[in-house]
Image 1: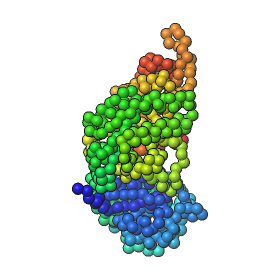
Image 2: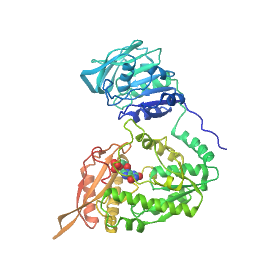
Image 3: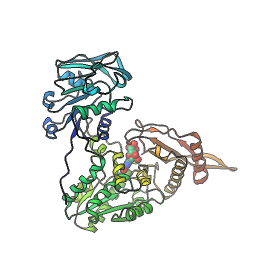
Image 4: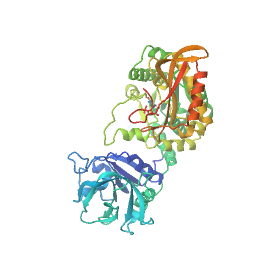
Length: 518
Ligand code: XMP
């Protein structure tokens, strides 16, 4: 029988725009305490209504003395029904709110610094050494400490941590959330457990039971559809909804013709046989290729693919009749991206999804993974019985090979790319590098170069290899693949894939480049 989800002790993070804000949330969740990120300007009524056990003010790129610096729009004391911890910029917000003074530092502290704990009784530093390495990243420091606050740690150059107001206020100038601060996790846990007394009662797995109950009571006996992309997120979302309502959910898996070799068949078999999902497979390669004919512009390609997807979905949903809900594998980073301090992020690439569909068809969204990070999704995927090798697959974009073929997408280009993709995946797996790389794939360039094979001149295409390491796809570095592995891949690509006579390796990071070329 359905019951309401159990409430969890919650830590709220107010985001002042730091690149590390999500990391703070992850550290708190790794400590099994539920945590959410809200924009810094969230009204205090909304914050207090959540009854948080503690609040963390994140770092941020601004300086508190700047005219347009992000600040609280109410008195900090209003938040103090629970303890508040400021990190970096957050500490400076606290200092300036309470009447202290913040100035640019003469000696800016970036990178490692040696922290000297001045108050061994501070709960934040309980059980930790009197000296430790910490990671700093800010050019301002506090030159006068507000009343009611005392300094608990310093570096050679400046005040580095403080607390006060009867144990309600804490602040650190360094970043406890980054791996470069070796005792950072312990410091955050001291705040969460000792200061806030939060219960460690949350885990990604607890989402399963809560969502199953929620979906059952929300959906009742209505029909639900889910678009499967063949990727991890939509698959885990579908598995979770299946757990809740079984056959009431129909999954639609579209063969766009833009997928990897054999992917449609093997993935459909997995959905049906191993996961018992109710799957409708739609073979629509001709429809997609027809619509893409003669189109070379990347955004135009993405728009066309999105439109064709929606048309297919509409058709299938109509065929089923009476569908009320649509399942989407939206993750937590997608949610906070659009509410963060930076405002809705600029459209860099129109991602294919079934975006316009819910309004057009009057469908209500079910997004059971909205609160999870990617690795947490993998964890619950395992618990839901999804095979490990599927969960470890590299992400594959919805528009598939269309955004890896620069210029027009044709059958011939797809044949080339599919063959090249298989070789790259095979060689990385042989070299046991597949799991340490976030994504690795070929990109077909609209450029031909001269080569020589045997005694003959060739004039064929150039293929680029893109391989990146990343934690969430939002930033990425090019993977330092060993030269001999690159050499083997290149030799095989040129000798086995007809139409390729040159291979290059992409050595750009994101930003400023993106992972996909289009
Ligand atoms: P970019 O190219 O923006 O990609 O650096 C970041 C991550 O997102 C994937 N990606 C997509 N995934 N639909 C998707 O489902 C899309 O339209 C799409 N475009 C990019 C990309 O493969 C990388 O993992």
